[in-house]
Each structure stands twice: as structure tokens, then as C-alpha cells.
Image 1 (cartoon, rainbow, N blue to C red):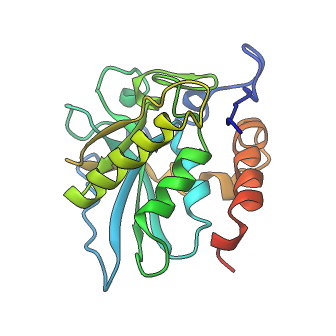
Image 2: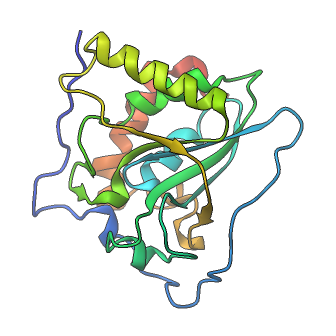
Length: 217
């Protein structure tokens, strides 16, 4: 059965991610770059799938995943702020970077969740969030991750799992700039906000239904 996606928001009625918060824009420590080392058997993964509030909320709930951080990758401007990234002129995508234990959850399984919980067929757009900063992207940290992501994408397209071809960018990881503090744990602390209720909650409900065996106890 092909997967189809229905936009949760009606144009002009509900706010997009970019309108959600502008706190601490001018006071941010712009030199902050997330370079936390892997601990034990943990490895890193970096994904972009629209607004990072959504992606953070999804991957926080998976067993074997920790230290899910929202931030910016894939651009050519150093130390960008949220305000700057939202213009679409820095080249960055809103992403999350996480540590995961491959003995508990594999990169293949992370990709399965990634491609199931957003629409990878819309170029530079997720619902009402439009712009290159919302592009679907896998920033790989190793040749193994690259090969796995490319093979998975090719298989999904060959089997026509989606109604349209997957346009997810698969590119080498370079730098991750951690987002401002008020973006951390956003859904868990603001679940009653309209964007959270109408956009993120349905993703969480889908996650809990489709991947209940992968959730943290």
C-alpha cells in the first residue's frame, strides 16, 4: 500500500514553525557548536525532516537514542541564529543530531522512522513550512551510513512506496550548530501550542502506533 500524506494545517489559519519563537535571538552564544563525543558504543546521526521541533520529539522517544539536539547543518554561514536560518539564505537545514546505540537500534531502523514520520517527496517543504531550511536530509557521518541511506532510498523509490519519488538529500556531515536553548525539548514543554497540537502530536501518535516496539519504556 502506498503511503499518502495529508497536510494537517490549512493555509493561512495555523502558524508555521518559523513563527513559533523568537526568544533569545540576540543573546545566543553564537560560537556554540555541538561536538559531544560518542560514549561507549554510541554513534551519531543527523537528520533534517522539516521543523526540528517535530523531529526532536519523534527521536527523543526511541529506545537506544539519547542526547537529541536541535540545530543547523548543511549551510555556508558560520554560527547562524534561528532568525537567520529562517530567512532561507544561510543554506542550513533545521536538523537534529542524536547519539544512538547500534546494539539497541540500528541506523536502518532510524531511517525507517525518519522516512515514515515526514513526507520525503516534497522539495524544501513540510506542510506549511516552506524553504530550503525545511528540506528532507540525511547528513551521514560515515561511508556505512551513506551507503545504507542511499540503498534504502533507492529501494523505497523502486518499490514505489510513496506516490512520488523521494527527494531526500543524502550528503556528508560537516558542521552542526546547536540551536538556541528555547528550542530544546520544545514539544514536551509546549504541547498545547497550536503548532504542536496540529502538526507534532499526529506524528507522535503515528510513531506510537507504527513503532510501539521501538519506544522507550
